[in-house]
Length: 432
Image (cartoon, rainbow, N blue to C red; front, side, top):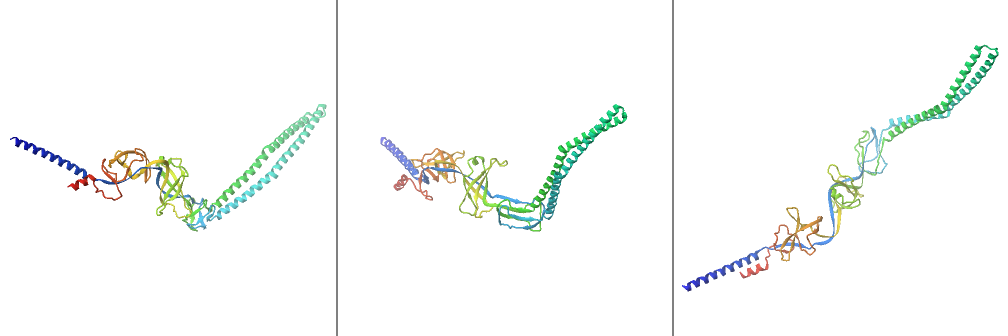
């Protein structure tokens, strides 16, 4: 009975040992079968990094002139064709101006007449009026003196009884009248000297000025018949032909200065504040392999009222004439630059659902571990790390997205298979 009980205990012990050995073997097998993911990794680098500000735009001419006549008249001659280069001040179109030249000739005649009238007034009419007024004063003075003497003589005769009182009174009245006539002549002379002479001259001068103004207007009308280019450039449009009537205010010739073109960008205010006139830019043209170099030439001092963006002009040289107005382009400008910045490839950044950013590093245990980081400037290739990493960290640059924390990884080449197993797993397979 005791032997049977002892045998039963030994069997249970052996069974327990067998179960423990089986469990341990399975754990080792499971650990050996855990996959190892092949990734690419690199250490952060230190260097200069610049913020890149990109936007799309349409190429516009450096300057443009839509030339329209200020008068309505038939076209006599057109001296340019589309695509022809012109210089500033060059005659482009001539309109029929015969009626305008006739009006100008009539105005010139009016100026001549007014000038002659002024000369006559200054040299003849005014001196004659003054002279006549002076003569009138002299005559009135002489008449007054005679009348005064006569009145005095007759008063004496009347006092002596040699003359009647009636004759004495008549002589006195004549003397008073002569005095009044003299006073009137003096005042008239003063008026001629101080007022009439000046107003007559001013009237003649005013008539001459008016005639000259009409002449200037007529000559301006004649000049409107000749349309000249206000800028140097290329004729891009000329819709009318000789014989057709050019309407006032309607464009008959368009000239563009395409020696340089402008990519007009609309940027958010924070991005535009990082730019300065003279900053370099790259402009990518469709069909052109290499981007062209441009320069920031204008920063709008005000926000666009509709989009609340800032208009920025990037000037691109076009001396060869290969670039065309209206071409859509993609411009990239350099914003803030940071020297000695810690940076990693942009592909190493792992975004989180809450908006934070992290990277996956390879720990000393050979496993992947996420580390939250704070980023700064981003470019299409790199990103600046402000905090969370050190230069010694081994950052997974490719293959880290979606890895669970603690996943075993190994650094390999792109496309390398991920079927390797840990050494412990291979040893277990050999024993089996």
